[in-house]
Image (cartoon, rainbow, N blue to C red; front, side):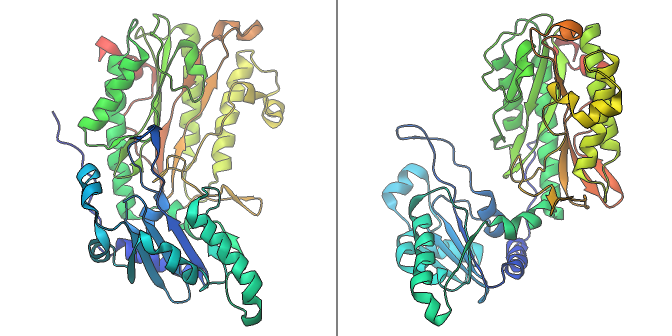
Amino acid sequence: MPEPDTAPELPEDLFSSRRARAFERLGSGVLVLPAAPILYRSRDTEVRYRPDSELYYLTGATEPETLAVLVGDEKRFVLFVRDHDADAELWTGRRLGREGAAERFGADETHTVGEIDSKLPDLLQSGDRVHFRLGRGGRIERLVRGALETARSRGARRGTGPRGIVDPGEVLDEMRLVKDAHEIERMRAAARLTTEGHRAGLAAVRPGAGEWVVEAAVEGAFRRGGADGPGFETIVGSGPNACVLHYVTNDRTIGPDDLVLIDAGADLALYNGDVTRTAPASGRFTDAQRAIYDLVEAAREQALAVVRPGTTVEEVHTVAAGVLTEGLVELGLVDGPVDEAVEQGSYRSYFPHRTSHWLGLDVHEPGDFAKDGVPRELVAGMVITIEPGLYIAPGSEGAAAPYAGIGVRIEDEVLVTSEGHENLTASLPTGADEVEALVGERR
């Protein structure tokens, strides 16, 4: 059994250097980043905790209830953490406490979460705007809203206090879009684990197997390889379920003539993989399945080929949509001419999603695809997915009838480099013949 794929170590000054960049973008504002909430499956049964991506990105902190505050004018980093509690630590493990957090994270000030109500309001009055994501509710949001009300009622005479609430993405999204060398290494490791999970899943595909068995094979390989688990709910869609874009029930028994679509990604040290492969349960594509599969593969290849600095995500999508539309016209599923069909978006009945999304700490990493209506150009360090697909609804009639119930998606993770791109998941084949060889007993 191979050794687990551990996350590459991070230099001690990585998070402080990120904060320095964030302070430059923050100006006179105050940035407030609370920990992700603890979620419950039912009653007091907790879901495995997943730290907030933005909080982790700037601080490295992963404990629940943590609150980070960056005061822009003073370039001051304030951290609120849980205090030691012997009874609670008996159940959920040792906490860092103020002293441990101060040593590990290098905060200028460290307080307990019990001091938030008394200390946060003054911190909020230190800036001209507060960068905070509204919508979670709770006491942090109440304090942020209260700071705005206080500034409006009292601050006008002195010209102090915040005058607006701004999304933290205005500071952080641009930073997170371009990955540093340490992030890239973690993403490469997550990609390796993701491809190994898919190989295990494809080896478990066979007629009569449950979708849940394939799911277990994928996620078991993730964990054996050192991943923290799946980065999102694993999709194993067989037969008609492959036509449901976010199908996660995984409770159907695979039929002999089914295609099986596996969309899964490993989470390694909070960085995510995201890959999709589609394979025939029998180990051999039927002619109709092969026609759709080869069309999607051609779209993937041509979309991948244009990824380089200066290209836009919109251009990547346009290439994929053009290839798919041309093939759909040839198969009689869409009326031509091809150019008109592309312009009218006729392909959307069969290809309803975009070709790419950003990838990183979040499976759908934040970041605008356009600025002021102008498509964003790719730059070295960005990571995107390339994932064309075609989904012919069960029960389709007319020219689509021979393809009814066929769903195919092929997805890779792609790093933009200074000279072009690197397909992080190229080790997992996409060609139809190679995919057939990975299925079930044929592996």
